[in-house]
Length: 81
Image 1 (cartoon, rainbow, N blue to C red):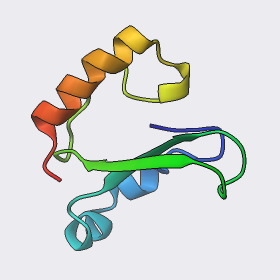
Image 2 (image 1 turned 60 degrees about the horizontal axis):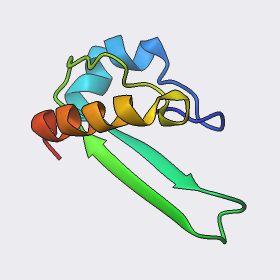
Image 3 (image 1 turned 180 degrees about the vertical axis):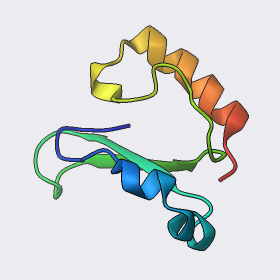
Image 4 (image 1 turned 135 degrees about the vertical axis):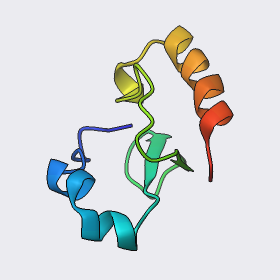
């Protein structure tokens, strides 16, 4: 899930065979918190199967609470790490 500070993975990395061979799994990270990093922050990471697309999985800060709850179960069902 992206935040304004993060950038999406460039398409070149998703299609580059050498990168996929060397790094067959890629993780996604999201954080939640207010203020500077020295304040209270919670971060989590997940690895999903290559090629899996979960509708609505993009930016948690732009997702409704109801959608986040649905995504939580979908992510947990499919997570490999």
